[in-house]
Amino acid sequence: MNNVNLFSELKIERDKKVDSKQLMESLKKIWHENDLTLKNINKKNDGSVNSLDFDKMDSNNIFHSSIIKNICVKYRLRFLDSELFKGEYPQNITKIIRDLENKHNTKLKNFMIMAPSKLFKIKSPDDPILFAPIGNGYYYLIHKWGKEFNSIRRLLVLPFKNIDNLTIFSILVSVVFALIGKLIFPTLTMSEVFILFLFLVKGFIFIFFYTFFLTRKNFSESIWNSKYDSF
Image: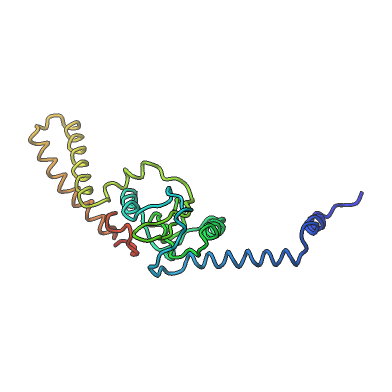
């Protein structure tokens, strides 16, 4: 029996559908469109908005900047120009954008991305969301990719929402440690526990705030749309 050359079989089967010249022309067009789309995503934002067909927009994908800000602050995210994005886009992002452009007969521009801070510095699998501005502070959600956030994230970043939250967190931690001190040393009177609590409050407030600013961090309400690393 003759050996089967799979490469030859593949070419024969392909040539039944399309010849090599047509194939290269099709691929060249796809590559060119993909390259233009990705370049457009990464272009510097010039402040202008996109014109979408109102009747063809999905109302579920329309969000005002105030809503986006609330979510960014709640989960400690950034909402920045896509040119600053350093993560990876999904493989089908160019098709998603082209399909939307064809649907609305327009060319999308000035993309924005909502994602964790680290995605604007290094690659990460966390979930970014791509938006396009449509005017009057509104943004149209184009695509979301990556894995889902764990709901525990909201609790973990809650102390860093603003200065009040970090202060309250410091007080709560002091209360817990004061109660632990009472359990370890049951002979302590309530006055002594209260004095211990006051010392702990001053200590934890100093530690948390000093460490927070020493590491060049800032509160979520201040950084949600900041282009700088910390501030």
